[in-house]
Length: 462
Image (cartoon, rainbow, N blue to C red; front, side, top):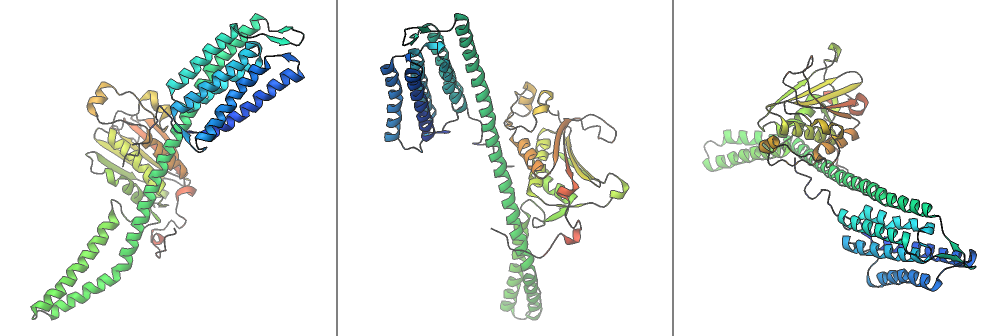
């Protein structure tokens, strides 16, 4: 399988994820909110605040917004450093306003959490630590140094020191918690989107191979009759032209070129698969097609297909979905990668379900990772023995994630476990086990008859 992880990793810096227009809109909202708060405090609540300095602080934010609109296009995606500088400026401006209006006695001091949260959602860890560190310093400073909040009667409005200390502690906890929470959620969302992109690429590639194989198979089917006619006519001509060497060689050349056309169509139609043009195929054929790219990689593949009861002896004809083939292929690749010598592919079916198990005799899944098998970008530190055995292997978890996602999209339930000798199970199978189970309604062909698998060629819908 082509490595889809190249260029699809989790970067420590999620650059280019914030548009300038987004920050400008958020800043205008902040300006409106700050202006409304200042007007309400000075006019409605009769508080004696340094109005000129407060307006100057808000004006600085207005000027920076106007400059950003004038000198930069609104659709510009900001780099990590540009977003960092913007958030540091916003944090300092907000801290200045809080300083002018009572420090931590002002409940709006809680808004200092906003730049830290935005930083955790958009910037790399180092930048977030810088913004968070500045927020901690500013809040700690404001708890001690600030202009008093006065009424027009010159009465000082302040909370008891115990409440101020509690407010400071709550903001500190909020900074740490929101930064960790927002950063974690955003990182997982980013990883999932990247992994889903890789899944879509894998599925699109498999669909293209299916469509291409269908075109080739259809061409081979349609050209089969005229090529056979040409072959027959050239053979008859060769019999009649034995006495005319020049004409006999021409007839022989026609026969050879007809054979060549047949061989070319046959080789194009295989492409590592069998009967790509089938809409449905027997269960065994689907498993063999999924396993074929890994059949000659030095590990023995054992395929066992049987019904669960004597009444289930007739093999089902299932839909040949690209999701199923590519998902199974990834599971088989993983088993072959880690198997010591052998891999088993066991399939069974009953009235209401079809099950395929992929097993190997390798070391099995790491016990501490079993609960996370199938998550994207799951890394585990390799032991010295694993490093010596497979120094080139750097798994990112994308293969199993793609397999699990595609198979679940086809209606399957996928589970992972480590093997142990049980009745009916190979004693050698002590490695990893991946079990895929479909309800028959999700996978079974409507006709379920091999004779109906091939129909009249239809144009591909584009």
